[in-house]
Every structure is written in structure tokens, then in C-alpha cells.
Length: 327
Ligand SMILES: C[S@@+](CC[C@H](N)C(=O)[O-])C[C@H]1O[C@@H](n2cnc3c(N)ncnc32)[C@H](O)[C@@H]1O
Image (cartoon, rainbow, N blue to C red):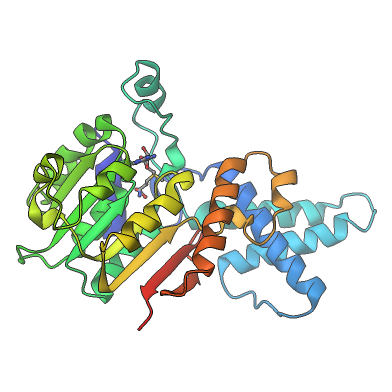
């Protein structure tokens, strides 16, 4: 229990991309997915001859190495050491690029003894790059009130809180989480980081229920248990919970007046590992969650038809979609 959040804190106070942080290696599945994603991007582009991708970042170099190895391997010639060397180098590049969650807490045990009804997979948190980006975004738009849907161990919650104005009583994060266990787990760390209940409110319930309690005019008795400063409208809303709920969360937020007129809504994982533009990935990569892929596809289709908002996809990690009210 001791290590997870302090590690996160350290990360976000350090650099955005810190190679081999903690000396841990990134999860191999993530690497494989990223390789597939980058490969499909490179190959699709090369085949269509539309984009000449410059190899200017570690990710693009990795993509280039994988594409070169694939082109050699698909020629039918026996695998050469140079193809293997390219794949190994690509893996080194990718595994050093974004080290991932710490593994010190016994999450399997939490699930087995029934303290959590969900298996809290280690890869449920945003990671250092996206967390740092989100924090910087909070500062860039001068957000004062933020709503997060999906807290897990509070990585992004802390990134947000750290970037709100320090001495302003109105600065506040409301974070929604299904698992009561996680509230008890994170709050001591939030306090230790200087963000007590006056700055962060954790609401535990199904997000679809909690969202109904957040309009400032809410008059039900449940709504009264939530402090007024934790209610909307919000300058920034970040959705990162169960993908099957995204359509409903979006409707509750947009139709329920939770997004301020000048506010920004960010929605995580809207490329769903690349399945949004390369559905064939699902056939070759069974570890991608089919239910999530379908839910994201349904969500993307819905939002494209909503002419009340402007939408941009930001290539941050598994993609963050940015939504603002149209003037
Ligand atoms: C991807 S994690 C959030 C990660 C967090 N934003 C971060 O990057 O550190 C998703 C969280 O949503 C929670 N969740 C899943 N279904 C939910 C629901 N119906 N209502 C509220 N929270 C839910 C899960 O328990 C999990 O902790």
C-alpha cells in the first residue's frame, strides 16, 4: 500500500518522459499493442502513399524499425539477424518511452477477498506522460473546477489537483469512482500531497448515478451530501471510466449543464488501441477488449453527429478527444 501513490507523485514532479523510471520494464502487452498500432499506421500510410512519416521521435523510430523488419520478413526470405535486431531495438525504444504502473499493491488479493468487485488491472491508470500532459492542460486553460469520471488510484486526480491555483478556495476537483475501496486507499495520499477534502471530493457510486447529483441546482437529499463547490458547471471534465458508459456520461454531462460554456471536455481512449481506424486489429490482437472497442466506436459515431460541439482527436497515448461547445 505504501508505494503506489508516492511513486506517482514523484513521477509527476519529475520529467514527462523518464527513461527506465524505477528500472521497471513496461508491460509487454502494451509494447505489442503499440508496435501493432504504429506498424499499422506506418504501413497504411506507406501503402496509400499519402503521408511520409518523419522518423523524428522514439515512437516514429520504433515504427520505422518495425516496418523495415516486417518488409524484410514478408519478402519470404528466412528471418535475418538484422530483422530481429530491428524488432529488439523497437521494443527497447518503446519499453523505455513510457514506464508504467508500480506493482507494489496486492490488487489480485483485493479482488479475491471481495474488497473490490472489479479486477483492478495495473494498466488502468493514465501513466506519467498522459498525467503530466493533463496537468499541464489544466494550467493552460486556467481551470478552477474540474470533474473526473474514473479515478482508480488517483494518478490523474493528483495531476489535476497539482495544477489548480494553490491559494484559491474555489479550486476543486470532483472525482467519481465506482469502487468504495479506492476512496479509502487514495484519500490518505491525497492529504499527504496537500490536497485534502477542501480540494478533492471523491464520490463513490456508479458514475451514471453520481453525474445526476452534480448540477448545482440538484435538490434531492443525495445531492445535498455533495458539497456545493464539488458541483458543476465545470471548467474541465475528464472521462476515463468504463467505456460502455461513455455515451450515457456524455449525455448526462452535455444535456445536464455540467460543462461550463467555456469549458473543455476530454475523453480518454477514443482510439481504443487503434481499433477506431484499424478494426482488423481485433482479429490479430485478441487481448484488445472487443466490448470496449464496440463501445468506443458507438461513442465516436454519436459524437460526430452532435453539431452542438467541436471535436478534435489529440494523439495523446490511446488518444484523448477534446470537445468544446460550438459558438
Ligand atoms: C481507467 S481507470 C481510471 C484511471 C484514472 N483516471 C487514472 O488515469 O489514474 C477507470 C476507473 O473507472 C472506474 N469505473 C468503472 N466503471 C465505473 C462506473 N460505472 N462508475 C464509476 N467508476 C467506474 C474503475 O473502478 C476504475 O477505477
